[in-house]
Amino acid sequence: MKIQPSPNFDHRPGNVAIDMLVFHYTGMASRDEALARLCDPVAEVSAHYMIDEDGAVLSLVDEQNRAWHAGVARWRGCSNINARSIGIELVNPGHEFGYRPFSDGQMKNAVALSREILSRHPIPARNVVGHSDVAPTRKLDPGEFFDWRQLAKQGIGLWPQDADHLELDPAALAVALVQIGYDTTDFAAALKAFQRHFRPSRVTGRIDAETARRIIGLAQVLD
Image (tube, rainbow, N blue to C red; front, side):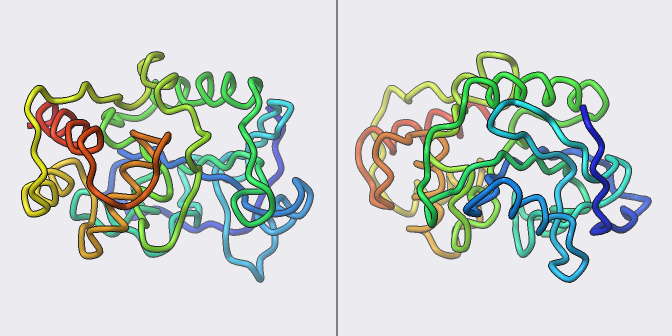
């Protein structure tokens, strides 16, 4: 792992434990542009780590410090996401500049790095999330190409089993999404974020049977 210090950090509040891991894509045209922005004091954005498309890992901000990666965000009723999280950026141009699948090297080292982080911090599986999960009205990353299922198989995060019963009532599904962790102020945005993470083959923001069964299945695990 190489160290590329970013000046964009501050101290974590002393009474807040690190209990979240948040994945992002860089969403810029090139790796060099993304790295320059993450290290530009004027930009005031950063992450703890960046994983290049060849799998190389850069350390930008020490884990003991608060990186500025989540912005306005909310998960499980908490809005202080930067204070309590580790942020990992994966180099990818994103939806604006030609979104593409993450490389095998990126996903392999995302697993390896996550395991190291989880060995150091008490992060529950339900708190391994994407930027779009915590900011569903603003963000799309890391997007539908990120292999959450594979991470879950490696013990990182969760992957739901579909519920046996079908629930299509929007109010009941909103309750279940809140139980999982989503801010449902904009229900359609929260539903789309759930699909992007847990049902990436059809990201519509609309209720369908498979999405509904998966929401209820995950909520039941967390009950």
